[in-house]
Image (cartoon, rainbow over all chains, first blue to last red; front, side):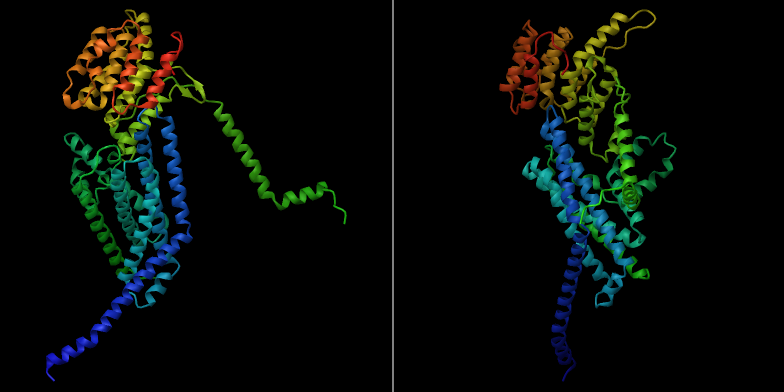
Amino acid sequence: MTGAAVMAADDAAGTPARADQRSRGRRALRTIAQDTLLEAQRGRWLWLAVCAALVVGACAGFARSLALTEAQEVTLAFAAPLARLSAVLIVVLTTVASVVREGSEGTLLLALAAPVSRASWLLGKALGFALIATLTGLLLALPVLFAAEPAAGAAWTLSLVLELILLASVAAAIARVLGQIAPAVGAALAFYAFARVLHVVLLLGERAQNYSELQALAPLVRALGAAVPRLDLFTRTDWLLGAMPSVPALAGIVLQSLLYSALALTAAVIDLRRAPLA
Amino acid sequence: MAHQPATTAALLRHMRRHASWWVFAVLLALQAGWSLRLANDGALQTSPGAPPGATTLRLASLDEPELAGYATSLYLQGFDAQAGALLGLRLVDAAAIYAWLELAYSINPHSGYPLMLATFDYAGPAHLHDEASRAQADAQAPALRPVAPMLLELVERAYRADPARHWRWMAHASYVARFTLHDDLRALRYAQALRDAPASASIPRWARELDSFVLRRQDPQEAQRALLGGLAFGSPGADTKLLDRMAARLARPADGPPND
């Protein structure tokens, strides 16, 4: 038997084994994602999202009742930012609590005792968080969709879901690194606020360049700005008030969300491989 | 078995057993009393104070200028009604109101809400302020800069920046200049600006001919009726809530209060 024939025979034997391994990997991912969703559901995440959507709707309705003109615009101007902020809070809290609990209660060790790599475990968790983010985004978008034009509402909702997926990945990475709920939630929310208002700070810095004493810090702030996503371009309220986003702008948001989610999850994998588990 | 009557000792025993509930109830009653006392202690404010900077407001709202702009407008709209009491717009600090309206417009220039408040709610009371200030002025204390024309100039600025969006408020500003401020030159200048607007602004014909359609009338009620008619039947996308409010003001007797 020639060497090539031996290799061909090995390949023939190896193909079903590899396919089986891939199938087992997919099953593990699905199970971890489902467990993540189930755990969040047991933590009353869905109830929290429904209650938040009702509160947002009530606040927007109250603002609408006060408006003497532009009632539609007032409704959307109140509903959209409140929905966005509520969704962000719910997703950050749920994600951080889940990651920290996995570490502190030892379920992470249990999961890794099974034939699942650390990266696969994190990918499964990320899939679960993406599902949570998507459902939260859709629920919180309901009060906005009631008042908005369909096309603008759809673009806004898509952007909200992508923003929440990005933020869930960042919150998971931060929770993995910090390992405690309070600092991790604080850091994730600070990251969010920073990414939302950074461009305003940069504009202020440029205007004050000639007389600011902090001029030396400008390169540092610009470098920080390059390392965080431009969340001010996501889920903009003015889309709902007539300034529809262009297709390239929406495509940019999709790309930014995928890129930054991947970046954050890679950071989490590095930490998971580096640090002792218990 | 006969039911034992509740004795003082049994009641004390019960209270000891549920001491935390009794303490909670007492503290809750104290909290409610404290809140009610504070609610009745609110003195009416006549001035909203100096507004924050536009950038500060933008940062505070996490870069949501639409929310910040509308929230500012709603705050100003309700400023005369504090703790259930009506202050009366003529008593409000007009200069501070102008500064807040300018902030609301600058942070969200697409909205006509601050322009509506400027022409519809605050121009009349501000004019009364200006008149009173002029009457009291003397060599030691010269009259302050009149606020009512500043309010109309804010509307003019907004109109010149975006005629298609703000022509309604410009038409109303022209009406206010003619019949409230009695400044015919200003009213005609605004009417001329409406006439000269580019065709792309899609301003209806009655608004372009405001001087003959509204301003030439002698009776303010009749002029307001013409303006209301133009806004209701001659304008695309008429705002029914605002029209109802204008109609209610029109239906009010001439000696009624100047503010809603």
